[in-house]
Structure formats: structure tokens, C-alpha cells
Length: 448
Ligand code: S3P
Image (tube, rainbow, N blue to C red; front, side, top):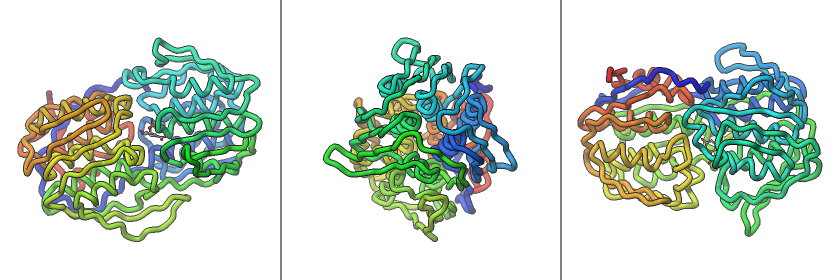
């Protein structure tokens, strides 16, 4: 849905201790993939715990447009009747992926080796983001893309009629690009190989195997070599979506910062390719325990017990950890503002091409709240202090994670913090406001 909803200004104030159980929503990455692989399978896929954020609902609508049948039985419980690998029909309408880079890039991959044409668009944020990072490798399969200057949406993709398999080395650490190539490789004959110099989230590889594809992963001096054998028959599965560690990060960090807090966040994915924030927080001296570790839906999960942690220390996050916490830098920057000494985040240039330029959005917002910042193209340094002034209105820039990060800051800063528009939060965490206020947070819809 690219029509932008009315802005919702929201103000966060210093909170009493946060207490209780935070049931965060299903994982966004896994939710997109479950719908897409369900649509590419033969037979029925049942999904439980699906994130019903706008990004995922837009992917669901797209899968219908490509010919799959989707049924919502209950909140988070969906069924997908797939069309099989190579079975996508040509959509009659423009595919609107709203705010979702993951949605549009994975769907482009999924259709790129089927001889159909589709036109993609998104909201003002998505239409600024680079698509050539996926259309370049998709061209190697034989697909053709025609977009706006700089490889921007709206864009028309013509799928390859006689696709060839591809051998592709990722020029940037990106699970979206890796996944687009693997999904395109499904309908190409022979073996498609993707090499990633740094490990990125591996949900596509795991799920492809779960649906019946042959995917091997080997370590080599060049990085992880992922080999997919094309033209498998994927068969419908039951996917139990674990809770999203990237969404859990917001109540977790709020509890770390608000004195007296003690919360439990059950059933959160602990996939090692998503774990960088938690590694970093422990390094900073956070009080987080991982209780009841178990496997759910092919992913390691645990219940997170989080207590307020006085005396957090600033740390350095190395470039090789960036991919495993790429969506968590906004909230880490907020935690860093309350830690002793500088926190140096290295190797973060990919943040410049997210839903917003997240280095710039965090730097300007934190400065407005009285925090000292240094930045260059690939680094963000936050100088922490015992207390943070707050007392500013910050732009969320159509970016859900920027909005949530500054609302968490406002729960612990001296003066309230207002986010000019909290509506983008609905893309990934529609129940954020209710969940946080249920824990005791003070969030109010403000008038501007
Ligand atoms: C995602 C990959 C990451 C991440 C995004 C979700 C995915 O993007 O930022 O929120 O589900 O594959 P990049 O692949 O661009 O790093």
C-alpha cells in the first residue's frame, strides 16, 4: 500500500518500571518467505504466527496477484495453495510492495525466471531505494528490468523465457539479494551458486530445504558458498514463525534503560545470523538471560528475561558483526546514548539505503535530543552520558525502526520525545503501542 496513512505524532515520557510479558510479533523475514515459498509450492502450506504487519500483508496481496490462493483462518494463521515452481501467472495489476524492500526484492527474484511481466511500485521510501542490486544478478538469468533512473521503482520486470543458472558473488552483504538470486534459481535448470563474503540471515536457505529443495552451504576462502539445484518440486509445509528478534529489540532495550524494569519476552528467534544486537548488549553489561532454549519451526528460540541494567558501557561493534544486527543499529544507538563512553559502530554503510538513511536519521535525531554524535560514510559513534536530555520532536522519515527507537529513548530521557509520525510502525509491529503501554510505558498520540 503506497498511499501513506495520516501521520500519527506520538510522544514518549519517562516511564515507571516496565513489567510483564511482551508477546512480540512473528518474524518479518520468515513471514515474507513463508508466503512466497508457499506460493511456489505444490499443495497447501499452513503458516502459524505470521506477522500481520503491512509489509507482509503487501506480500500476501502480491502472491494472490501471481495466482496463489491465500486464506486467513485466524489471526496469524494462514493457508497458501501454491502454484508450483514456474507456475506464477502474470499479474493484471501493478504490484504495490508499500514500504518493503524485502517484499519487492524477493518477489522480483521469485518471478524473474518465469516468462511473465510485472510492474512493481512502493511508497515514497521504497521508491527511493536501489533495486539494481537485485536486477543486476537477475539479468544474468535472462530477466530484463526497466525502471526509473538509478534503478528505482516503479519498475517493470520481464521474466526470462529460457533462464540459465547463475554463479554470483554478492558485492554487498545482503540477505535480500542472496534470496532473490536463490528464488530465481528455483526455475532455472542446473545449479545456481551464490557466494556471500559475510554470512547474512539464512532463513531462505533453511526454508528452501524445509520445502524440499536441495541447498548446500560450504565455507570457502571467498565466503559461504550456497548451491541450489534448480527446478525442484517444492511441496507445501507447516511453517511455525518464531517471534522477531528485531521487534523484540525495542521492549528489550526499553527494559534495559528504564530503572526497575523486569520483563519476559517469550519465544524469540535466536538464529545466530540475527543475534548481533544481543551479543553487543551483553558486552555492554546488559542483564539478559536466555531461558528455556528450544527449537521451533526449524529455528532456535528462547524466552528472554530482561532487567534494567545500570552502568552500561560503550563498546565497539566490528564490521563483521554488522550483518547479524543490521536492523538493530537504530535501537543500539539509543542504548549507547545512555552508556558510559563512546559506542563505535563500524561497517554500517548499508544503513544508508534502508527505509531511510538510518545513520543520518539517528544522528540528527540524537543530536536534537542532546546526544553527541560522530559519523562518516561507514561509521556511527554515539557518545553516551549518565542522562539524556530529550525534549525534541524527531522525524521518523517513513521508517518504522527510527520511530520505535526514538519512542524508546523518550521512555528514559529527562524530557519527553515526540516522533512526528509513528504510523510506519504498522509495517512491522502493528501492536507496538499496546504492547509497550501494557508493560507500563507512557506513549501518547500527540497533536502536532
Ligand atoms: C532482510 C534483509 C536485510 C534487512 C531487512 C530484512 C531479509 O536487508 O535489513 O530488514 O528479510 O532478507 P538487506 O538484505 O538489504 O541487508
